[in-house]
Image (tube, rainbow, N blue to C red; front, top):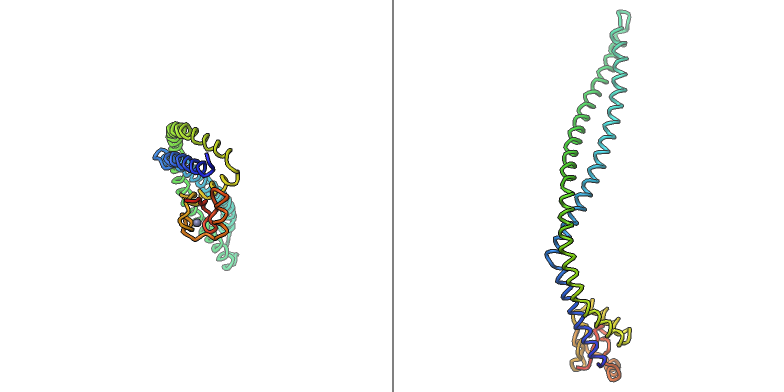
Length: 235
Ligand SMILES: [Zn+2]
């Protein structure tokens, strides 16, 4: 076979391989598989985030509990002083003590509210975490089942494309390396990487080719369009 024929055949084979592979790539089973995988990843990420969040809440609760204990100790101490105040005590001292006790009581109330809110949040998060955690095994099972079906489809695709790819390899061996390399590269940009010359214009982008480039077509089966890069042959 001549180089141009080989190139055309190569391109045809590449198109067939792509059609078969795209069939699987766009298939419902692959979408289902990706969806199942994403679901598991999302749940796992959410779980991790919530576990981090609950750890933070626990740390805050611990800190509050420490503050509570220290405030309780202080209150105890002040109460003793307050009840021990006798007639000799300065009215101002009593007022000071009362002020301090009230301050500590207020701190107590504020902490209690904060603690209750955090506990409520923690409990609802823990419920949500438990719910999510029970969904994971089922999701993993669904994924595994879908994967079996997908793998069977993939095996069919591989079986179907193997002879096409084998023929492509044979053709590659018969053509200059850079020619196939160019064709592959242009194929990623254009659906029609190999085009005929129309008059003295590229059949792909319709730009006029220079006289020097056209002259090279006399010695070579294909030339590269200087505008779009497609491989152009004498039509
Ligand atoms: Zn062109």
